[in-house]
Length: 614
Image (cartoon, rainbow, N blue to C red; front, side, top):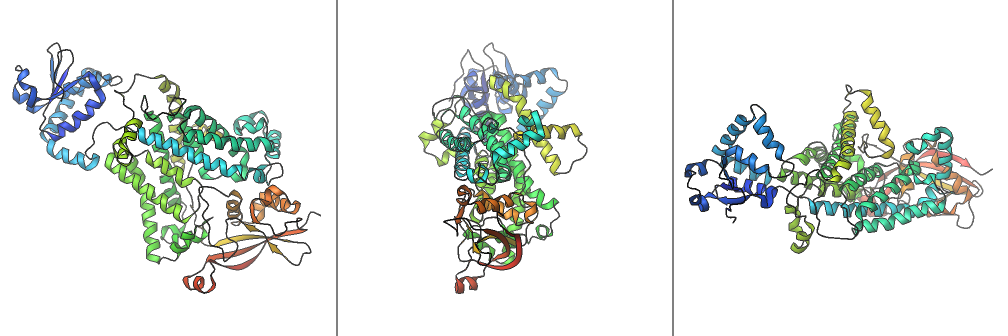
């Protein structure tokens, strides 16, 4: 217990009051060694000039020169010693009406300390000191590195087949077309290092080198420069990736990765202890990103007008019509209708109501974080969505403070990871450099929400700003499955040497062979398999890349063929290729038991006509 000393102010409080003790711990964390704290039950005799009833009525701040302040004035005087909080005392002293309102509010709180204490425990728990988030920030940066690792490693194994010189959509041809049509502005509207070199070697180097770089981020080696380089390289690949890198989680990784740069600590070698806390504004922006991500996911389903979402039957179709279901999706699909409807209600609750708990008091924020993590785990259990669920869970971990997360880590490790600091620094350089950028990102996020909610009264210049920064993908719109597909059309590509006997090309992960169980591939993403799902939603003319795929199969491009599970023409490419479309559905329990099939299908007709190189 602190004892009063002559050279420091001493704040004396009621040691028998649980409400007072909670607030004192919070103030102690702010003021550090600048203020001494002591219960009046122990030190009242040392200050005979203060009546005992004054100690009972309110806190007393005794200054070294003998000056005594009480109640709200004592609070503001004590907090004024904290760099960055002196403005509160100035407002109290100089703004008319603030002082009497503050003192009246203090007296109300003092008379109702017991019920307010119970209310605080309900919302904040037993930890009311100023929360720190060093553990959560450390975990977020490590998981961000893991997301980068799987994103880049997955690309490294596919990139030449997708956008290489003999791939489906060659990056070099794309950049040549952009240069011819856009001119000098191409460097802003299509930001990529591929302008310097778009060869196969350069594309592989960017993806493989970035995979190594993501390991450095996981190991906490030079997190600031490494996360910056990873963001630039991923933006470069997304820009030239065209249809194959146009998924929402690619944008989510870029947005979260950019905010990760703002959060990354300034050190070169791995260290557990942190000299300063992670920037608060970066954490708030990441909270805001998580809010927009989840809230938008629910809103797009409501605003789309899709009847199956509104009558809560969407999940009766979702498990088998989603792009790449897992084997667990087959079991969830066979659940009774009441379970599907209850699941839809739970989903809407988590996506529309729970995101507001992100900004709630401590315990309710934890409840919100737990529910958001739960729904991500359920999504990951039934569908392959690359690194989306991993990255979203990383964002959710930022909702939990050090006092909570320390329970799940060894004590020695958690103590070293937690940053011990006396209080906020006065206008550090980093804040000056990044505050304007943070404001722009926050405004852009608000504009994304305004666009989602169809708010029309904002000036057009505001949305023009949003369009101007869109090439950087640091603020994006989100929302999956606004319209639920109620049938699954699956494209089957076939080849033939004489135009009569046709053999199927088998993909690695998308449905094809009826007897093959749905596979688990996340957090990797087979990007061609995913695009085949989108292509099946329309005809081949709505997916121009599909014609390129058929051309590469006729040419026997090794890089493109490597994207497939089985090539029925291993020695030479076929003379003809075509594509037909089927309606696929999960089998029932009885069909699975009797036939061993996971899928049943019905031929719908031609998708792409039979063609040859001639």
